[in-house]
Structure formats: C-alpha cells, structure tokens
Length: 117
Image 1 (cartoon, rainbow, N blue to C red):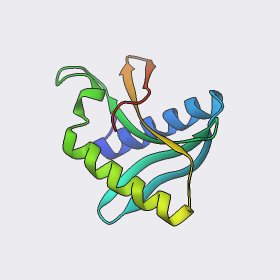
Image 2 (image 1 turned 180 degrees about the horizontal axis):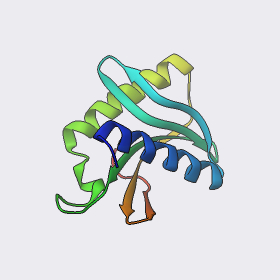
Image 3 (image 1 turned 180 degrees about the vertical axis):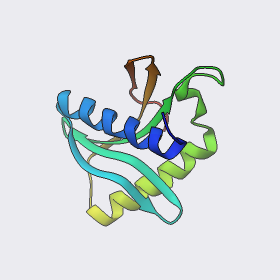
Image 4 (image 1 turned 45 degrees about the horizontal axis):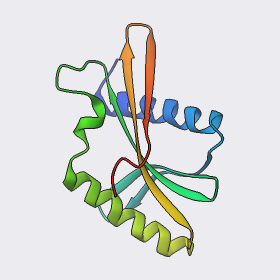
C-alpha cells in the first residue's frame, strides 16, 4: 500500500461502500469545517451519523479505532455542529467509527456505533 493519504482514501471508500450496503445514504464525504474534517456523513433510520474512518495495515501501534483521541472526537463534534447548523438538521445524531484493517489480500471492517458523544 502506498502512503498514508492513499491508504486513508482507500479505507474511506471501503467504509462508504459498506455503509451503503447496510442501508445508509451517504450525505457527504470529507466534510470540512475550519481545519476539522468528518470522513463520512450518512443518514439511516432518521439518524444523521458522523463517521470517522481509521485504516491500518497492522495493529503494531494498536487497533485503528484506538487512534480516535478525545481531542479528535471534540474536533469531529465541532465540525458536526457546523454541518447540523448549515443543513438545518433537527433530528437525532450519532458518532460512529469504522475501522478498516488490511490483512494480506483482504480487509476487515469493524463498525463501532455510538463510539463517542
């Protein structure tokens, strides 16, 4: 696999495909507010879901989902607040993490719902 950006982009594509197969409607990808970014904004069952995607080729430095720090969660929530404001959303929201692990010629997808708030 190439550089980190390339790996991240590939992981985000896999996560978006996974979400769509699970019945989510993708509303935005790489939504930016200030210097913050939300990888995927999706809608399912009248819940707006903000998804952080973490991709790894090894667990040497820990599992992908463990790399979402409290500070990173705060930045995502700040961007989510702006997305909600811009789009006039008044329904329920949720914050998920999708961890993608590449293992030889396959990948594993782990979906953590309500990962932080």
